[in-house]
Length: 381
Image 1 (cartoon, rainbow, N blue to C red):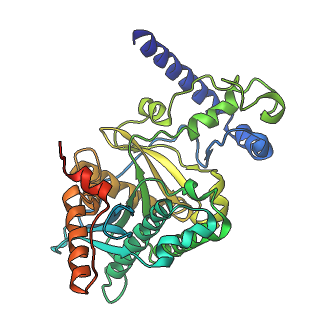
Image 2: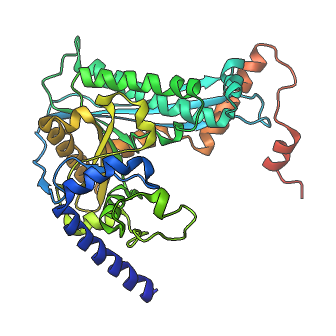
Image 3: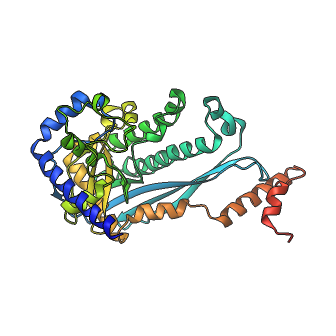
C-alpha cells in the first residue's frame, strides 16, 4: 500500500510537470490534435482557454431559482402478475430570496402496451435497456418543461437568475452504438428540450461527482508523446499494455485539478470530443470545466452556448457552488430530486398490489406471480 501511495504521488508530480510544459506549448498541441486526431487511439478534451486558467467564482445572487430532475424505474419481470414497467421522474424547484413555495414531487408513468414492451426489439435492443434510455429522455423533458413554464409567461420570472441541473454527463456516449433510428428517437427530443432552455436563457449544467474522466490527462499525452507527430496508428497500438505517452495513468483529471485549483475556483474550459457529439448541433456540443467546491473537485458540463456567454456561465457556476454549500458537499437540488425519484422495495410491492386490485376489479382471473417468485417470497423450509 505504501508503494502504491508513493507511485501515485510520483504520477501526480509528473502530471504537474507535463501540465506546465503543455501550458507553454498549448497552441502547438491543439494544432497537432486537429491534424492527427483521426489517427489517435485516445480522445483528449480540447482547451478553449489557457490551461493555467483558475478563476474565482462569485457568490450567487440572494434571489435565484434552481430546477432539477432525476429518474428511477421498476423493471419488467415475467414472474410478476403482469409484464410491464414503470418510470418515475422526481422533480424539484427551489426558490431562494423570493418567498415562493418549492415544488417537490414525482411523475410516475406505467408502460404496458405491446409497442412499449417490444417496440425496441426491431433494433435488437432489450426492453430493460430501452427503458433506461426512455428514462434519460424523460428526465430532460420534465426538467425543461418545469423550468420553462416557471420562467416564461404567464409565469414570467425571466428576470430572476436560475439554473437547471442534472446529475451526470450531458455526453450521451451510451447512444453511440445504437442504430440511427433508435438513437434519433431518444436524442432528438433531448436536443429539442435543450434548445428550449437555450431560447429561454436558462443555463443547464451536468454535475459529476467523483468523476473518473481522463480527458484532460489525455490532452497531456500529446505533450508526453515521444514521436514527432501523434500518429498512433503508425507508432502505437491498442493492444499494447501501455504506450509511451501513458506516463501518468491511471491518474484522473480530478486528482490533477485538486492540486491546481483553490476552493471556489474553476479550471479552464475544455471542449469534449466524444464521438456521439457529432450528432449534436454546434450550439449544444458539450464543454466542461472542473469546479473546486471545497469538499471535492467536480466536473461540470454545459453546452457550447453557455461556454460562450461568460455572464451565464458565472451565473450557472455560482449557483452550483451555492447548492454545494447548502447540500454540505453535494448540490441539494440533485440530492432531493434523487430522493423523490427512488423506488424502494415497499413502493414496488404497493405498485403491483394496486395493479392486482385493478385487474381483479375488471374481472381478470388467475392473477398472481409465477411459482418461482412465490417460492422466493416465502420459505417452506
